[in-house]
Length: 408
Image 1 (cartoon, helix red, strand yellow):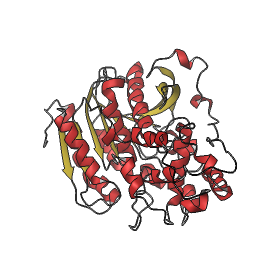
Image 2 (tube, one colour):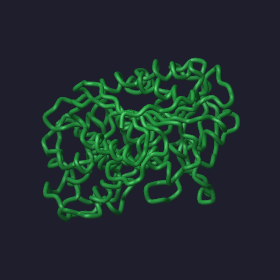
Image 3 (cartoon, one colour):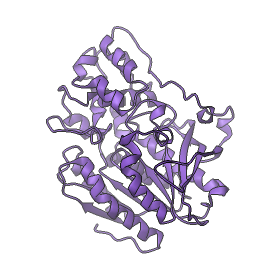
């Protein structure tokens, strides 16, 4: 996330703050229409959707395969699962998750679904691919935390929560895929997770997928045995972020444009972003359409909406606004079934902290057991590191069956 005028790092600029670009690109009429630009399909046939996808139920396992050992996670067995999930329009999709099984695993031991931040539009940016690269922006920094979790005997599911079209920015979609990834992992008998208690963990963009999964469980996956959801640094209201976002040039503008492109992929009829881009915008879109963090940042460095759009005047499009509202947890009526651990910095300049407070108060009023923790830090991603140990310890207590504490 970012607020114009404040410094931002590559990791701390989260795609969700940049949804302001989406609104800014819903403009006056364009001279020529352009269709959404989807990523190049994954050449690995494992990721493709089967012809009988319509007959499968959410969470049904479509295929599994054993993967080579991972450099960063020695001793862990790696299993990829393809499963049936649901997109934002309610249509069936094929999605994937990667399960790490610890060397000391016992049947029925806990399962943690870990939603990572994914900054990219290409299918190569999916967690299941990046696990097998040397990308320092992904698992090198997280490896100590995840290895400590594996040593506890927990299995870890790592969903590709942007979906098969790499719909960067589509928050609700991430929640649906996360829930179905858990269902699928528990339906693979070889993993020994059928009776396992389950918890979820994520920060920033990963926290958004986690928060949406927790809030959607009641209506989408009430049968899951979720003991808790730990979510940190979550942007709860994209509408407020749009209203606060300016149109100035920014070093991380590429990620803002990526959010617009990704949301258009998920809502092609309701957010026709490409139809309102100028020639330079369409060229930049093509440049980043299959890129990950570094390529996206490089392409958009120092640019602004005025460089890519046919106009900078906004149209108050009610349907477009509803799309943004539908991806804002503060505005979503449902509440989690499981206890929630939430952490953030009260000085976080990158997300609307009042929306977090409002959402947690609403959860408390509805009877959800909530523990909110504050970690004073002006840097968004430093708060992720500061809060992660407490989040894991909170999850550990839930797995041990201890009553969840509350400061509602």
